[in-house]
Length: 134
Image 1 (tube, rainbow, N blue to C red):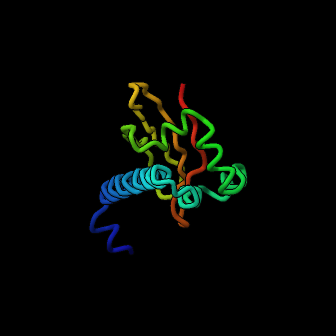
Image 2: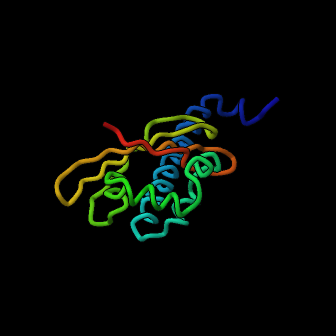
Image 3: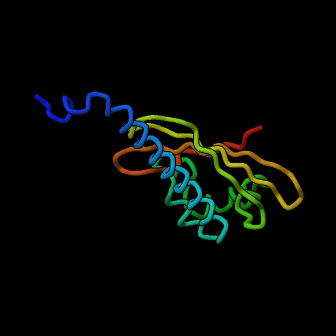
């Protein structure tokens, strides 16, 4: 007989909600760290936060830097003069993907939205891709 289960049969939803909340905080911190590394010009550091699959798709660090600098939207994301906010989608469990919407307001007043796909696993967090929302 499992004493913990019999002593608190309704504890699982509370624990799952707490785990979910903690994972959301971690996922947001991961995305914020990646953006901050871009904003200080640490492209190698930002690149290292990508999943192995995403790194293979992007190429090397120099190619990644070229993609960011060569696209006006990604360049705005990497510009520290632009305000930035994150919103993590709800999710549950430890092994899944989370989506983080990142809104950037440029110094010209333009608002851009990015969707960061972040994988959550026993190995940690990794960015699987970033899309520019229309």
